[in-house]
Image (cartoon, rainbow, N blue to C red):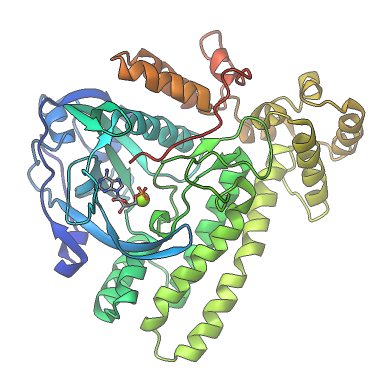
Length: 466
Ligand code: AMP
Ligand code: MG
């Protein structure tokens, strides 16, 4: 297979990564490949070599396989040494849209950054990332994407023995806040400068320098988190090593979409204190941007002045997020130009939803119909709110574009994984078809994917993909 690799990260100073190939596996078997994304990248997924390439057994010509090094704050605690412990980037490709992207295998074997890990992934997290990242893309959220998934024919040992798998992930880049932190913490200003120049050229070409870069990353990240909020999405591990500098959602571990709305919802089994609860995400976003700002300080000639400027930039994050949040939730209510007055209209609905345990997705999808009322116990309170809202003359076409019918519901994702473990991928393909048309009118085939879980089906906890 010929892939037109055009690698730029591999040309950066060699201490910024470890050049190495993926570790071959026993029996590569293709489960899924993404035809649209493959066409964008010029990758021939019908090639007889496809499974072997996506498993890491064949390194295609022109690839420059490497594992990136980074650091990060995990649940607020500094970890000076992280990196691609179970991933290998094959290289970069400029798509037919002119955008440069990384092609990375995740679950591809140990690297110098694996610590105690085996460098592998099991089928569950691979299928979950495939479904959720492609759903996010279809929902209009900037995200890494899934190009392919393979099984390895090898067992992976976790709390049980699971089938091993590898996902091929595509991202505008895999550079994280933690990548900057790694070099800043070592006082390696030369590498920090090279990384900054690379990121500006690649993702923010009109940024004049680190201060401008910071402003633009903050703007993108604030907009990204507002999109998560507007869909009831909880990332679950907003560690600084999981914050993409390109402003994409990255690292689908214990992430989840809420069914019943409650602002303090947490799914991740390891998030004991709810640091990454739904409602905390904007605040954590600002905290993560403060860490990014700190990592850029060594590049500035006047440290005191930089601290002042960067602090102001980080303090703009909450207002930027609020403006994006208002835009997104305004659209959900059919308001093309929401004003500050609409903030209470939105929040009053969310308060009623939280009090009565309304389903987040259904409530918004059904707002224009009689059905929304059924989500509420206190119907009188909802009727009062509804009247207030109607006076704002909502645009139903705008609402249809902002309120998905279908999100990857946790119980569907888990059922799909259970079937996959038994070698039945039909539920995976059916769920993928449904979640990649989230705004389409429901059909007989897709209606079941819109349905909320019953009490028995409801998933309370999600787990990391390690
Ligand atoms: P994550 O949970 O994806 O944010 O991962 C945190 C860190 O642990 C990263 O440096 C990963 O590369 C590493 N890691 C996670 N799982 C494994 C694994 N199975 N083998 C080796 N490294 C891993
Ligand atoms: Mg990670």
